[in-house]
Image (cartoon, rainbow, N blue to C red; front, side):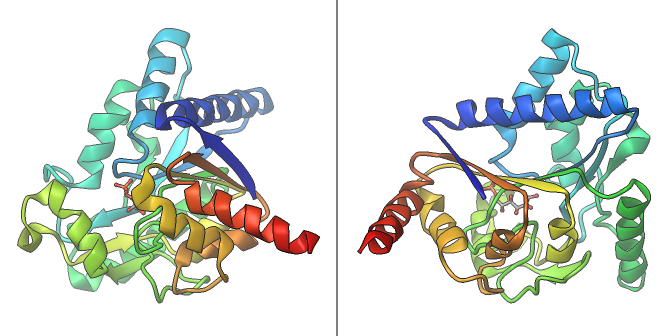
Length: 260
Ligand code: F6R
């Protein structure tokens, strides 16, 4: 795994944005369409601001880019103010030249009997696009990636899941009240994420330090689904100093023991 530690989330996000721009340009030269997996939440906001700036000021084009979002709250239609469809449009897609038909977000407003089909079609659409070139991730305080909460297996696929109480508590800031936070979500699986050719995970702030330490220094286990990334051949972590605190301390300790 590559660790990139920055002083601020902005610096880290700008670095990742440059990586995304170079992926887009490499694909253009090769005559391919880049397929990028996207996350929502607070973490990627600075990245999305920078991509919008690069589009506006540097002419970075998203015309050939295909995107797949990780997840959507169950029960929320696309126009719901808190839907991830809406979040992605407000924070990114509406400000780019991306083609609407190239945008994919799981549908949250489906009938229970249609869930399995929706999830299978989402997986099939990823496969039809040629798989994900770069998957962008945040990490939840439970250790989730996407909404793969503790207990998720490494081979899970897109499915309907129950949100962990910690995740729902963290979402109160968005929904105003716990009772308004959906109990379930559609999420791509850990297996789907691990099939991406490369993965970039971002985490900011001291509130993420413990889970980042557990995920990347601790054992690989479904108790902390982000730890599955340790077994992926191409993962880059973009961290600010507070989020990297335990990781840095743990690495020093490991280094120390290996010298003993
Ligand atoms: C969002 C997602 C989640 C978030 C995680 C961190 O699409 O898949 O795994 O990345 O919950 O959320 P924030 O960034 O709000 O701390």
